[in-house]
Length: 267
Image (cartoon, rainbow, N blue to C red; front, side, top):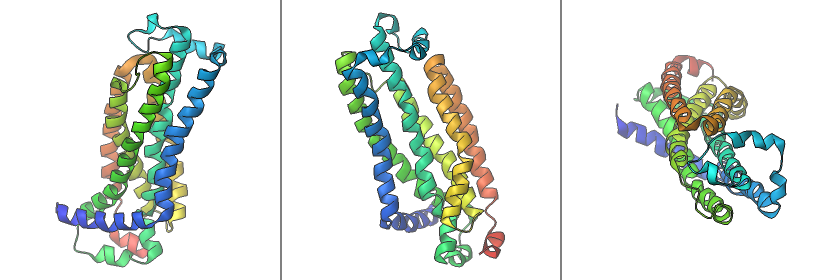
């Protein structure tokens, strides 16, 4: 493995990313909507009208011990915590959505731009090409997700101080979801999108095909975020182990599909 070659591919691809106004706009606006606007629209109504949380549908979650001091909290405080926890679903959508924008262009974009022959003929291994392509999507996606976790925490704690009288975030689930689940979800998403990109002729086709393939991953992440609230962080750790296996398997599978001769013949 020659990391200098991987870096060269990453630098070239990243230059193309930052030159695209569409990609930059998506990188900035999508997380802003999911981690700033949506949490505000969740917290403000229950803050202004606590009676809005009076619902038999929500009372189901009150039977589960979400925090250590659960029994000492009022029903309104418990429901606020439930709302906070389910906002993680929005957070976990980011490592699924952003790779559909960046990674879809990885190989299909080479065909669109007519640069595929140069890449195939380059004195570089398939593994180096694949890692360079992955890094182009992985680093920006994780960086943006981690950066936007800051306003997400600040907004949550502003309301938490008013309702709980203490800062609810960051907690153990925060660190597990942000620093373990998010990177693993990003790796899986990127591998799926790169696979879609190698199997399609245009970036648009890759985005559409890849988005369809990502639906099972979206369901898995929603399941992990939701059920871990009910079954504690042990369920979350089991989910991480499963995602580690899927991450490695998706990487090896994607690399095995990088057939330069077939790819060149399809251009």
